[in-house]
Length: 259
Image 1 (tube, rainbow, N blue to C red):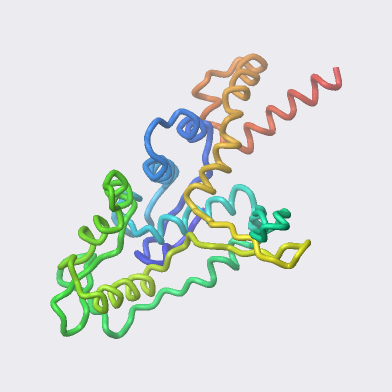
Image 2 (tube, rainbow, N blue to C red):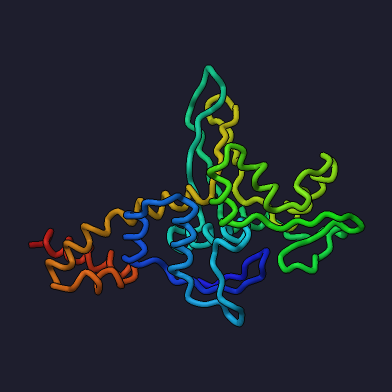
């Protein structure tokens, strides 16, 4: 899978996960953000014409954008989920669906005229003001999670000076949202029973990792079945692309059913 990241402009090529990544998903003991970063680092084949990078060093926008593209490559463009109607006397199921391609098209990257590149790489400044700021990264997300007020700590890390008047802070936040829009967000669907609305918050990282883990958990049974039938080593089986591994498993199950 090839993609050009919308914020950094990095060109990356990702291979689809195999059994080793399935084990990573199943046996990970750390935080969710660190797992998503480790997964993308593991399947990144190259950065075409650019220096290598760690996913945790990129903007959250690039990070979540890529997770959605990976999800589309594995499971298709449509996302279908559901919520519950918020009307107290209804509580019916509300179906919510969208195409990933259409969803991502709504996010446009624009640098406001009032924003200038700062001499320090990765930083920007407001024209005519002694204020500089940068995009929050996945590493920032991990670092601030342990603080009692993570949003304030994130501001301290990404905005200098971190204590700004409300109007200037809002200008910085608006500039960041224009240059690196938030991909995770609220989705709404209309209740078929009462016409009320059901809300679903799409946390891109959690949603994609959950779907990946639902598939990855079969890796142990697959290894057991393939090793017993073909006498392949665990390493050889884990190196198989997931779809190919599943086809071998399906063939064994089909043959046994015929027998």
